[in-house]
Amino acid sequence: MLDSEKEWFIEAPWGRICVVAWGSCFNPPVLLVHGAVDSAASWRPIIERLPDRFYYIAMELPGNAHSDWFPPGVMMSAHDLVYSMEVVRRHFRWKTFGFMGHSLGTLLGKVYNLSYPDRMSFVVDFDPTPAYATVRPDQFAAWYHYYFTRYYQKYHIYNSPKKNAPKYTREKALSMLEHNRGLTGAVASMVLDRISEPVGEGLVRYIYDQRTKTVIFPPNTSEHLQKLYTNLKTPTLTIVATESLERGAYKATPFALDETCYPNKNYRVITVEGKHDVHVMHPERMAAFVELFLVYGVDGLDRKAKL
Image (tube, rainbow, N blue to C red):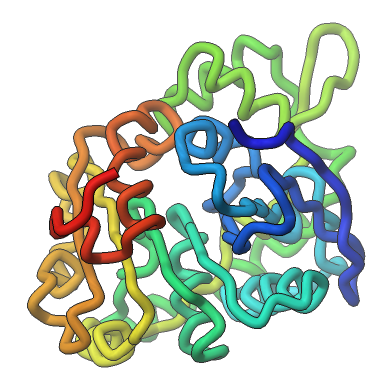
């Protein structure tokens, strides 16, 4: 069994980053990075099913949950968030670390891996749809206006303080989580508790920075992404949700689903039934694959080793 959950803060140039840990600090570290408008709470279901031979550290990205916001006015890009990962790495003085990311977190993991080569010892990507977002040359103007023009047109909204956030009944907030992310029951309640706060009279408000809704993605083409990603040498397990496949999330980047595209033979893909947050609602569908990979690497997924 993993040690009980622990939480504390790390100092960054703009404020504090909240980290949540499970396991012994004497074990090899694994950094966990959540998706957009999320928190460390979303890692609890899968962590409970993983081997206790690792030290799992979930950071909460700036502007999310208990981590401080970036200064007002500053736009938020994937590259900014990647630096927050490096702040955590430096705090713990890790020479290398394993990585697990979900959604936006997988994009940040890819950019970090490219920017800080040889830091990551392995990577597990949970439904990495944002990591494979592409922009064709003819779409560049649309990309620019979507992020930059829209940001300044809605500047007052994106930079509105937390006190101005809308208030909802708890029931309404839970309903929104079910509609937006497919989270229900005790899982939805657990996630909501971490990303909201009570404001009296039975109401709650979300505590995330509005800018986390419009994190700027790099304008990469499919061809460029393939050259970048397939040449990474880090052993990688990608877990894809069937719903994302059905809506064509990887249609522009078929290499994400084709292990033969990776010359280093270090890439494996597993498909599991479920929605984008399947690791939260149904961790049992992937826990065995993740454990094999963590313990035995890609060979474990080739059934060359047994637990």
